[in-house]
Amino acid sequence: MGSKDPYAVQSFLRLKTQSLMQRYAHLSQAHVRQAALSLDKQLPLAVLPAPIPAPQPQILEIQAEPIRIPNIEAEPTPTNR
Image (cartoon, rainbow, N blue to C red; front, side, top):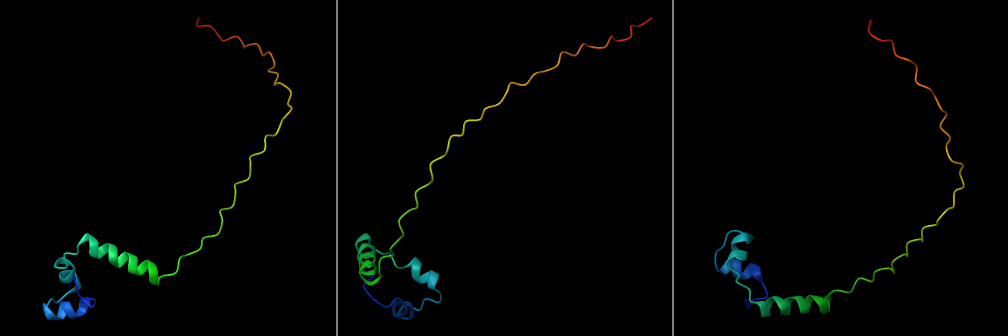
């Protein structure tokens, strides 16, 4: 697409919608690359802040006594008579 004004081409070809214009555009890879390079020159680069380092996990030592389970004897079950 050699024109800089897509609306003029759309009017010249009597295309009613922008989607029809996109259908018939048939852009070459070189044209798309040139457009991207042109935008790169015109748009300022966004400066991103430096990433914040994640804090290192702390390993805590926990001192606990073992759990003691009391020895509970099972109650006798009634037997069938």
